[in-house]
Amino acid sequence: MVKNDTPRTSPSDDTIRLTLNGVWRGGRDMFAVALFSIPFGIAFGTAATEAGVPPLEAILMSVFTFSGVAQFAALEFWETPVAWGMLAFVVLAASARMVVMGAVLAPWMNALPAGRRFLTLAWMSDPNFAKSQPDWRAGERDAGTLLGAGLALWSLWVVGTVIGVLGGNVIGDVSAYGFDVVMVCFFTALVVGEAGRLAKTTGYKAFVPIAVAALVAVVTLPLLPSGWNIIAAALAGGVATVMRRDA
Amino acid sequence: MPDASFPSSLPIWLIVPLVAGIVFATRALGPVLMAKAAFSPRVTRFLDGLAISVIVAMVATALAKAGPREAVAVALAATVMLTTRSVFWAMIAGVALAAGWSHFLPG
Image 1 (cartoon, rainbow over the protein chains, first blue to last red):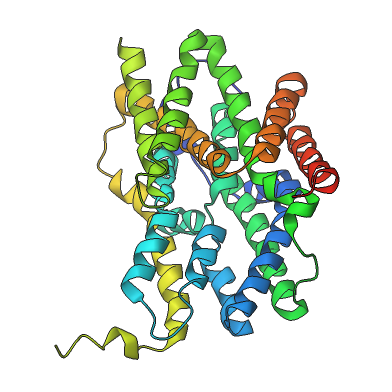
Image 2: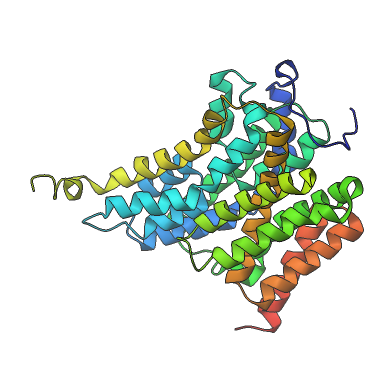
């Protein structure tokens, strides 16, 4: 495995693959984080029941959507008459960052045959996207790691939803156990790790896109519809990266 | 206005495929949009910047909406990551602090 300290270059098509071994490794490496999907799934199942969603529909939503933010947002609309247009807009806003993540993954995803590409993308979520970045910089070329990590998160999310739907609110408030900060701490650790690696090659300039993205995300939060501030911040961070290197 | 009531007449369970469809579309759209893109060094740098920025943006947004408990938990996670280089222990430290905060400093 080649240690890659230079800026990432696009992998050539023939080095990208998707194997069962990769799926297994991805699932194994994400398992500890994925366990925390269970309490969130329970919270969703409970909230869905309280919103009047029948058990089967609540479980199917977790099976086919696999997005906590979008699913919790959708619960607000579970009443007749359904405000279809507003529902679509809110879910789109809640999920729009996935377009940015997909674009970032495009050099890898588009090297796969269409079937495997969309199979992998169907299980893309925040944690396995975030984890894939340091992995692929370190030389990983098996897209199965992304899929396997997604499958681990998804299966335990569904398990949690079933428990929540059938068992009701068996755990209470997830914040009592600190579970509510799991993902933000996970993402912070990945960012710190990435920033440390980038700082070795680009010095303090590595922090420019991080500072720009954080600033834009906070400043635009009250100005833009929910979720779109993340898109604005990501694009600003991307532009800052290009301008920084070209300066 | 013959179509005004049309959406309201749809069964409520259609929310499930609608939400799933929109979310899948956002997952699939990025690589489709980039299919014709040439991955020049400039585009690659832009995508590199996007990659870390989208994660930073999620953290910053979560912290902007939260209080000191979450900020201290994240600060501890960052410190543990810097000292141990372990994502797992950084996460555990942040969660433990948040749990302790909720237990000893409720409200």
